[in-house]
Image (tube, rainbow, N blue to C red):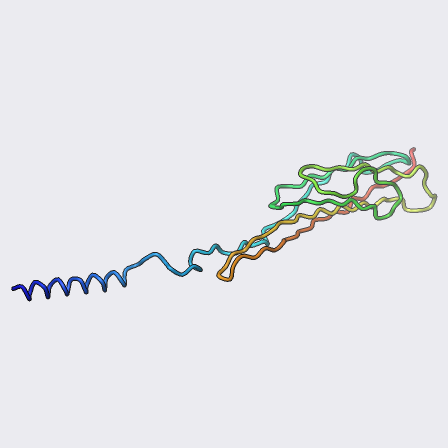
Length: 160
């Protein structure tokens, strides 16, 4: 009877070990707990531009402002460029911002007859975001950059 009892206990122990080895357990592979790399393609810049007036007489001053929608970025940079150089940008033409930004443009004091008098201003907004990725080889960081731009035409005409 004693041998039977020991045999049953031994079989039970073996059975429990077998079940324990095949049952689900916490993964021991370190890569199983690693987050997926961050997809940096989600960064998207969109801005809206407001011009106080679309045409100007010689000497007029116009305010142009831009507002960037919500964007996942650590740095938001802007650059105003006077493409044709007929008038003059007044204020900071480039920098980093956390909200709306604006600049003034002053029309030339006189116009040359017989020429097309259109000023072309170009606004470039750049969002920069640092992306950290973690995988089985370790962590890596990179930068995602997204740019948005718009051309802003201003007609310059003599006062009537």
